[in-house]
Image (cartoon, rainbow, N blue to C red):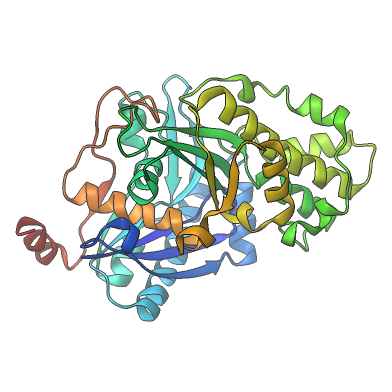
Length: 377
């Protein structure tokens, strides 16, 4: 079987669609990538959804995201070839697993995708984990383990909007996989660039703005006192804790240059990753970095400087899997696990009480054919 994973993350920069060949090992299963940025009006709505959102506004955004995902799915299939099902992550607009009761919400109408493509769609992956007492995130680490486990322990870092860290035991190591969100990845840097450019730029391209600035120690020390950085795993975070409003607050108190602001936010990401890694993960010698942050040379230099004991590598260059494809591939794999009814053990990752099957299934026009294939696999 071939699966198409659709992923849009907290960076809100668009949709990544990656094809996974489920009939080979995950390390050999990558079969292509198609990416599409959000149109400006949709991006504005997604960013605004971090604030108060009425039911009608959410319903409209759900359908508009669904139409976008459907457009990307059709284009990806046209470019990359037929697939048997689609795994849709959706857009996270709320993530509060420690509320009472805890909750997480990803929107983007799976029905629009199923109607547009005729294919079965697996979606809504996170809520079952939260219902069973977990954080609902991060969900990608077991896929990291299948892709990157080696003889010796290894670390994988995804620098998307948020920063997700995975410690993978060596092949003969009996210790469990460990993973958690360390805090912001690119989300604060991106917000600062939008402020400084008046909305004309959305990221620090090639880290040039940060490279032109100087890290300011006093405000950095204050920012590092954010309570999330002291919280022990299992833990996950999102725009509820690190968003544009926080960056505006810090910018209003800023006394230095704009370049210094971006440089200091870049240092914040690197230092919080390094601190979390040392506090809460066992030893390893190698760190593979994926996500948009891996393409930021200044952030990568800051990471290596903060972690002199590790070899910090661009994960895409090491593995041949594009950074943009990794999470979409992971959800394609999670979609297959759901279709096969496989309960996944995330106890050391999300803190879930018991293994659970993640995802909901929306049958498409190919559902009976897909069921037959699954039954004979």
